[in-house]
Length: 112
DNA sequence: AGCATGACGATCG
DNA sequence: GCGATCGCCATGC
Image (cartoon, rainbow, N blue to C red):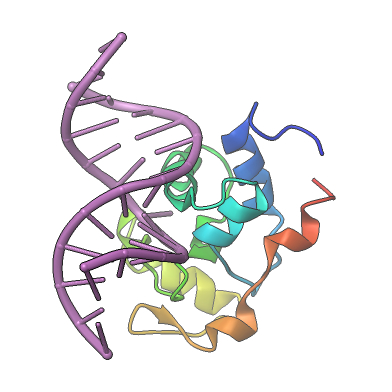
């Protein structure tokens, strides 16, 4: 393992940046992958601060596949637009076939 | 330094 | 099955 709790936000940013195009993940999965367990809120808060970094926060949704953070984007439609542009279909603020597009960050937990 | 909140999640009731 | 509450870590006041 490398830097975990020293730069928690930085780790979150890196992890989110590693999300492949057309894939999405959840706050809780990221939190768990980083060892936060149920600290999903921290991930969400990190996303709020991630606007200063080139972090594809639109690929991160809640565990229901719902675009809960779309309101925090420059425009409420930016999130679904970006997702659709990457091949992820979004309907009613929710990702269609979410589990199909789901990407488990734990797959890279040893690569970070 | 302590209280309140937040783009969530899980469990208890 | 749905509603309410606690937990998690960090930031803001």
